[in-house]
Image (cartoon, rainbow over all chains, first blue to last red; front, side):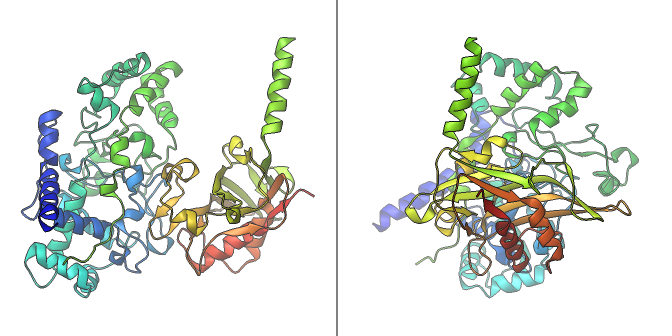
Length: 320
Length: 204
């Protein structure tokens, strides 16, 4: 019994550690930018996952990371134009989907954070999001026997520190890899596009791929897409102060796009039709072409990822 | 002529299939999203989004759940006649792990594991007629755990259940709730939810 359990744990750990490498070789994806840390293991993944779903991290224990990042919708906040925080506060930007973050150069719509490890600091402490101080979070975690036990086991320290919290959260978010859409199957010769999907792909390659580059369907750049910019959010300019960055935002991934509505940095476009209407004015796509394009975009939905129980709600269970 | 028969067939077919329906009204008139409605002499209202759950016959073992979306007329009716209707999603269904159909999180009605599904989502703005100012509001009312559980049985029975939004918003204005954004389980959420369910009436 004990041996079987041990073998299962070892196997699952091995599979987990191979995830990013597998994608590199099978699908010819670029090398990940965000690297695994020395603490990468099944246990640290489990810890990060539990933290991601725990409202304890917010100031009033009302919301968790998952409140705005639902696993069922590619970790986006579907149907919510902008993020929701503690005490019914509303942020000014759309909560993006969380997947394939290992290939991101920087994070947030304005690229204000350069590492996935550091990314969590902002939502944890932002007054319109989880509104908590790091001191309080650490205090709560250090008083929590189960968390303390897990942190000790992974980081070999008796007191939980900020870097451990951020590292553990990253273990979970780094593992959110979406690579099993119908598009991916076609790339591996395990399926064929319909005529409409193939026409949509041609249009995509002609008009969209420059920014939303396959296979990740995003680029690590900031662009203005012609959408009217409101004075309360100037995008990349707020980080660089450069005039040329006014109104530029991160190029989002189009994978799982059917599940990450509404669209744009402030969620102002409710549907893919509205998005294509916006671009259609610039690209002069007729109704039929827009339908073809949407048919192709739907092939980027990764149902395996969306329903993966490994990424769903989890709480720590005591270990012997 | 054959087309007339087809049309009549389709019409009667629709009538016979729609056993029960919700009628979303504003003071007796059919409600339309993004239209401006007068609340009183000085205030108007515009709603851009309205969705809510209706659950049928929960005490009879049935778990029929419908998501009524003001933007989708077809969601206002269903084929089965339920003797009892509830507004919201009861705790049994909330914790059943069902995430498809009306309960698919892509519908934008799922919060998180600890709060469950939103019972009523209503987004819009209140307009002050004298000065042209507007106040946006966002009500996400729900919860399945006491003391803020948002699930209520509609008293009565019938084939048409009327939801009078004027009655709801008039009662909100006279209530003690003055929060424009309610997006978490709370006392205010519960008060607004109770006022919402009080605005339902079956056709006599």
